Image (cartoon, rainbow, N blue to C red; front, side, top):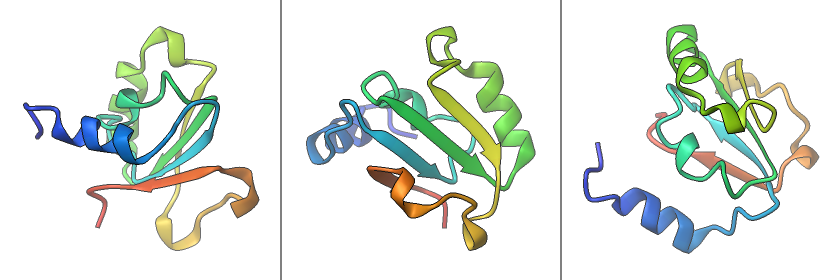
Length: 94
């Protein structure tokens, strides 16, 4: 994991999430999602593993319920038009 919080610090240094629609490829249990979702306008996360998505949905902060959508899908066939998102994140998914 990242006990020092370097991943979050660097992520926010490199990317401006404010008012952006973010696609997170391989969101897993939401570990990274919750670190930037407060700034984003909307977040769509997907993962192929339903067990991870169930954990993410269970851990999703109440404030993010209408803002963060989590769905099952494969990165081999991303089911969203590319024009839908301002930012795409893929971390620790390969």
